[in-house]
Amino acid sequence: MNLFKPLTTTRSLYINAYSGLSRSTWLLSLVMLVNRSGTMVLPFMTIYLTGIGFSLFKAGIVVGMFGAGAIAGGYIGGKLTDKIGFYRIQLITLIGGGLLFILLGQIKSYPLICLFTFILSLVNESFRPANNTAIALYSKPENRTRSYSLNRLAINLGWAFGGTLGGIIASFNYHLLFWIDGFTNIIAALMLYYLLNPADQVASEPIPGELSLVKISPLKDKKFKIFIGLTILYALCFYQLYSTIPVYYKDVYHMSEFYIGILMGLNGLIIVIIEMVLIFHLESKNRAMHFISHGFLLTALSFLVYIFLPFPLITALLSVILVTMGEILAMPFMNNYWTGRASSGNRGQYAGYYTMAWSLAQVLGPTGGTWIAGHWGFNSLWWISALICLIAGILFRTVKLQ
Image (tube, rainbow, N blue to C red; front, side, top):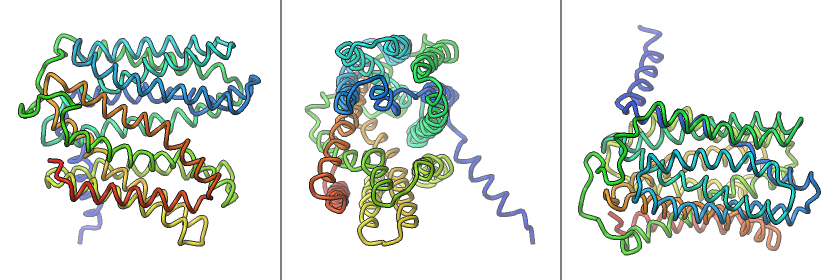
C-alpha cells in the first residue's frame, strides 16, 4: 500500500487546477496581487478621519463618496474600455489612482477630501471593467471561469496582506498608508506596461470562442438586466460580511478584534485553498446557473445559523465557512455569465454595468444593514438577508437567463 498516494493525488489535483491558463492571465493576476497588496487606505479611512478631528458622521460621508465614485467609475470605465481598449484604461487608472492616493493624504480641508475621494474612487474603479475585459480576452472558453478565480485569488491574497500590514503601519503613521497605496498602484502600472504587450490589446478584439449573437446594448439585453438585478440582491447581503457582521461579533458575541480579524481572514484563506481546485472540477459541467443558485442558498444559510445556533464561536465559524463557499460557487460563474453575453463591441459596457451593480450594493448594503439592525435588531437583518438570498437563488434556477 502506497502511503504517499493521497499526497500525490492531492498534488496532481492542484497542478491540474492551475494548469492550462495563459501566461497573460498569470501576469495580469500578478499585477492585481501587487495592486491589492497596497489596499490600505479604505479599510482605515474612518479611523483616520475621526483621528484628525472629523465626526463619525462626516467620516461616513467620505466613505460614501468612495461608493458613489465607484458607481460612476464602473460606468465610465466600461464605456472607455470599448472605445480605447482595456490596456490603456488599466494603465491610466493605475497611474492616476496612485497619484490621487498620494495627493489625498496631503489634503486637510473636508470639502476637498470629499471631492478628491470621489475623483479617486472614480478613477480607481474605472480599472475594474477594463481588468475584467482583459481576463476574458486572455482566457479560453474552457478555462475562463478558472481565469476569473485566479484573479480573485490574487485579490484575496492582496487584501489579506495589505490589511494586515496596513494595521501595523497605521499604528505608527496613517499618512504612510496613502503613500504605500499610491506607490503600489504605480508599481502595478509599470508591471502591466513591461510584462504585457500593449501592441496586442485593441478595443475590438474578439475573445476566443466568442458568440456573436448578442451585440445589443447591455441596457437592451433583458436577460442581462435580470441578471444584474439578482446580482445586486446577492451583493447587498454579501457585503454584510464586511459591515454589520463584525459589529455583531463584537457587540453580541463579545469577541475581540483579534478573533474577528481571524474570522475575516478565514474567508480569504478558504478561497485561496479551495476555489481553484473546486472550479477546475465544476467548470466543465455546463451548469453555471445551478452553481450560482447553490452559492446563493449557502449564503442564505450563513445568516440563518445566527438565529438558530446558540454557540457563538461555532456559529461564527460555520457562518464564515458557508458564506465563503457560497461566494466560491457563485462569483466565478457570475463573471463567466456576463462575459458570455458580451461581444467585441460592448464587452467593456457589460463589465461596467456588472461593476456598477457591486458598487451600488457596496453603498446600500452596509447602510441598509446597519439601519435595519439599529431599528429592528440583528435577527431581523439575518431573516431579511436570508430571504433575499433565497429568493435570488430560486430565481436564478427558474428564470431562463441563458
